[in-house]
Length: 136
Image (tube, rainbow, N blue to C red; front, side, top):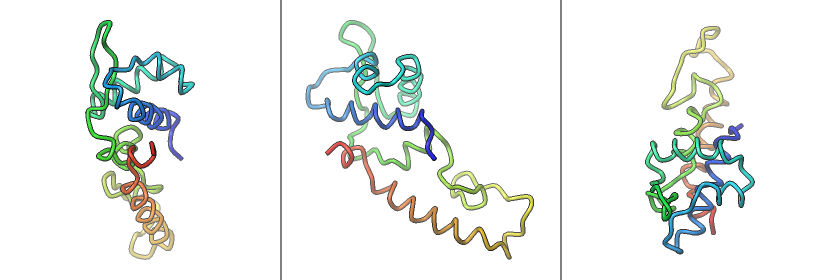
């Protein structure tokens, strides 16, 4: 399950993508109001998205947020890893955050192969799904 923080990050990026053609920066307050996201929480999320180089921000009267990357270059797998960390449901099947399960022997584990398949199919969908595709 993705976190509320990740869901809001996706909604914010979709909002920015939808308004990108206007050529203006968008204030967090506008996104918060239009997407029904708590403003303070959204500001924290947008700062993180800026640090992960998904968005750029500008201060002042003409300030706000814009996408730093093209919507077609932002896939859900990268976004989810940046915001929430591992995508895999078990640490022993994670590609980027692998950790051995203390209680089991991976060589004979009957659980691991199923969750590797779940991971692979999930990643295929998330890697292929971009903000651009979702915004259309």
